[in-house]
Image (cartoon, rainbow, N blue to C red):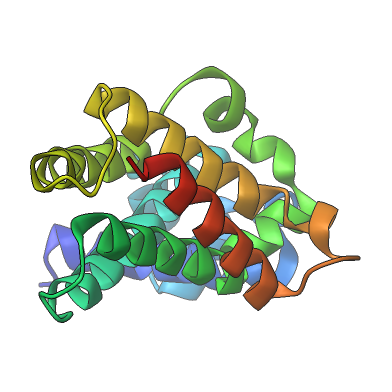
Length: 195
């Protein structure tokens, strides 16, 4: 018998496939159950509707991006300052989000799904990002490569700037491609964090 985690991942994988292909509005929990090879009650027991399922899917995908970028940053040369590594990590997360098919689909066709997490409150993926960034900022301040200031405040502004850059990418499309946008975000973040 498959573990609960494996079943949930299969359902989330199926949801990702459906949303990338059809969008959130045209995806049903029945479609997801069929694609995952599980019963409808199995899906309905975990998620009351597609919006809740997509919220968990986005959280999973963003956590995967954070972990992948964190692992990449951890293996880097130790000669760089904490600020330089943090900016590279943050822009790596931004690039991964800009290139992610699910994030792109939602930002392009159903951005209202992100409104709660853009305007009203932090989600669990935001909290995970803050938990990673705050201690790094503290280390950077101790090292002298990150400016003085409350680490929680710096982390929040860093995260919101990154998120807004990703979700507003179409506003830059006539002047910057993805590489240019990530480069400009790097300059912005480095300037903000520099002592």
